[in-house]
Amino acid sequence: MRRIRFRSVRMALAAAMLVASPMVAPAYSQSAPGPVSVADLAEGLLDAVVNISTSQNVGGGRTQPRMRAPEGSPFQDFFDEFFNDRQGQGPRNRKVSSLGSGFVIDAEQGIIVTNNHVIEGADDIEVNFADGSKLKAELVGADSKTDLAVLKVEPVKPLTEVPLGKSEQMRIGDWVMAIGNPFGLGGTVTVGIISARGRDINSGPYDNFIQTDAAINRGNSGGPLFNMYGEVIGINTAIISPSGGSIGIGFAVPTELAVNVIDQLREFGETRRGWLGVRIQPVTDEIAESLGMAETKGALVAGVIRGGPVDDGSIEPGDVIIRFDGKDVDNMRDLPRVVAESPVGKAVDVVVIRKGEEQTVKVTLGRLEDSEQQAGLDDGGEDGSGLPDAVTTVDVLGMTLAELDDEGRQEFAIADDVEGVVITAVDPDSAAAEKRIEPGDVIVEIAQEVVATPQDVEERIAALRQDGRRNALLMLAGRTGELRFVTVRMD
Image (cartoon, rainbow, N blue to C red; front, side):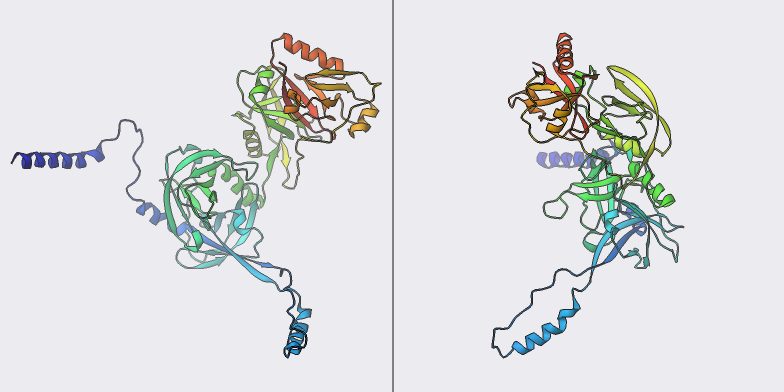
């Protein structure tokens, strides 16, 4: 009896706990638990998500090798006649099809958002709706840098649209839902959480992806990632997968980045991005220390593009941009994104650290053309054996330096507009060699002070050591004038 009673009491306590537990939030949580079901949410969103099929006519590939019958074979005449008849036809065109996803953001105008790579190069685009109806779509505009595209259909009956939410309000751990067309299985719903934010997967200059573990597969591209209020907070774009299927690592373009691009594509049919006209590189701990910065942040200006918006001296090589138009620039990747999101022609305040002091400069943005090719930083070159003995040289920090004259320019093929002190040799065991400094590089500045002679370099290094600096910040020019910054240990 006691055992029965004890068992009864235990069952009663368990039942009470089952009843009470849903009403008591855990002490460590300040938000509501995940939903028991997303059926109601999904039901209201499925009609706004579409499947996109495209087709493209592709020229025939290489011709197949001609089959030959053995000499003297009774089939020889047949083979010769057959292949001679086909010889003049040439390669045939073939039609290539692909599938993706999209979603309606303007039901009245028939505006649909998807990925650029879903429709890129397509000759025909067809949108398939949840009720089985199909409509031909025209391309309004596309942007390869953010992998977004806007389509337009002519609705024959009312469509269902979904709103764009604020991705910047989402937190790691928030529930999200993806709807799309994986492997051609339209109307597929998956649920997960936001695993991370601000991911850079090296797919473009403005990478700032939301990472999610909601299942995303081939065919989900261009589909929406919803929050639990039914708002689109991301456009599903890419996955990491050795097998081609979902392993719980998917990426979505945040609406914080997408909204401006979508608006421009709808209005202009193209993007019109702001352009500052600078080449930048990361601020490392060594660079921050050499510039006397209290913390490592910002984007280091390695060069100013001639004819660009700041070629008037408002921003100089060696400046560290820490704030742009009121937005903090915590690292190098932040700057291209905030500049691109700014209107062309807008006058903005840019906060820089110049020679250890914080300054604010006013600049007017130009326009970054999509076809513009920006040159990279020069980090290599041919080895040199040094200049003639008649030129005075000095050895500093494992580098042999000489004045840059006509013979030096010819020796290292250095452009006429490059000025500074040429490096003629580098000790392979030195700190300079570790930073890939090579003969033919030209020292333009040290610690943001211009140098013109090897003696200038010696004096600047001595002054830095006297100030207790451990690293020297060098601005180097490549043979054609491309600038980059390196820090060299002075111990």
